[in-house]
Length: 169
Picture 1: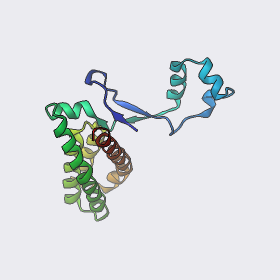
Picture 2: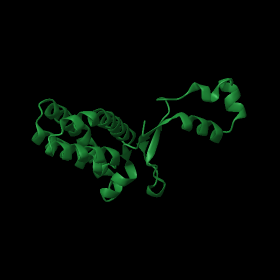
Picture 3: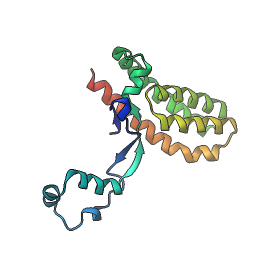
């Protein structure tokens, strides 16, 4: 999970997806017990990080809280609304793309972009901004290339929001 909740000055702008492209050869020849006992945690993390795929942070709790004036209850309310309404916007993006509806695609991307910006999903915001621009230009080929990553980040964001809501229920 890419849930980000460090203090703003320590916010990591990338998370690691350790399961994605981990090369088992990095620890070849060593049993898991030997590896854990005889290698420092830093050495193990360094070996794994070299093989990990860097993924953007999809939720920054501190940034979201700061944007909402530090009000925990307001953050919870916003996250609840987003967890219900954002999937509808995501579906509208996909429907508008399938229908080659550039106006509907621009509108849905813009609205989802605003929601994502509140919770600090900066890479998703950047990608949605680009889709919005491509929708204005009716560049559906470029949008088609971008939609799989938007889908992946969106689903990760929803998981993070759900986890956050459960953790602070």
